[in-house]
Image 1 (cartoon, rainbow, N blue to C red):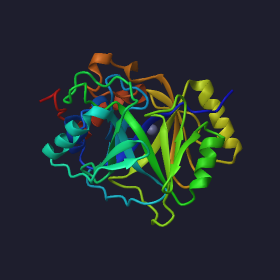
Image 2 (image 1 turned 45 degrees about the horizontal axis):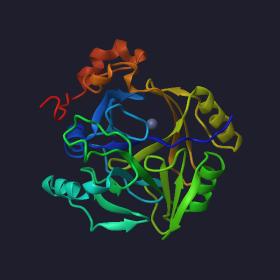
Image 3 (image 1 turned 120 degrees about the horizontal axis):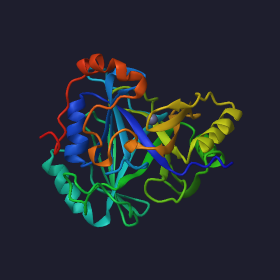
Image 4 (image 1 turned 90 degrees about the vertical axis):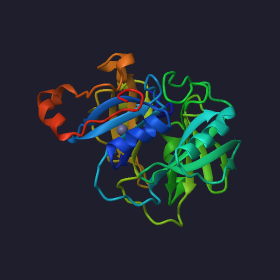
Length: 316
Ligand code: ZN
């Protein structure tokens, strides 16, 4: 069986205050809160999932809000930047929206064939918006951003690596990525059907100091597997190369394995099924706190420990 991933599944990062995180990713970026649950390994904290209307793989940005925890250090051995995709004609709408929201952004730049708007979220995590002519994915129709301008999902993620060749070798040799662009110490890889949502840039971070995980940094990036058999085939291949790979874990909305790539970025491989409608109706996504069956009996104590969240456009 092939061990090619079909693209980005999700990105998971560490945030500070959960309400500020919801206000930014729903209220300003206009993503939908598609799942409100807890960190299965630490049920006293939220795990918030944002995405398009359906929570499609390739659109899902998730956070563990660790309010009061120390900030991380951005550097090499990390997923350095997460880029979202918007329609080509929506650039003016978005620069106005960022200005109105008080978000400072850098002077617009060109990268390969795209225009890049670079800014940071309230915890200092680096983000980009890329105006792209070739993204026909359907955005969330009922969000605070008009659908014609709304974020389509990820454009790409950027990995900062001390030894870019070592990481690209794993990605092209085992995970099915193909190199499609190169320039200025940046190698662009694509998986699956290619295009926005299936792109990973590896950049030369050999002159940067090593990053350290904490608030405002990415915890891991997940790539897509079609199903459990595909996931197991990838697991066997990666384990055969000598990587320390976790057993298959049940994340309720997908099944996952994790391993650290040679440069230090934590990689997850996650199945597309069952998806976010597994435990609530598509129109109700993100409305109530969902717990996996094995945590349901602890619900009163878990709810007690969490600060209630107000979701822009839903709760106010
Ligand atoms: Zn994950």
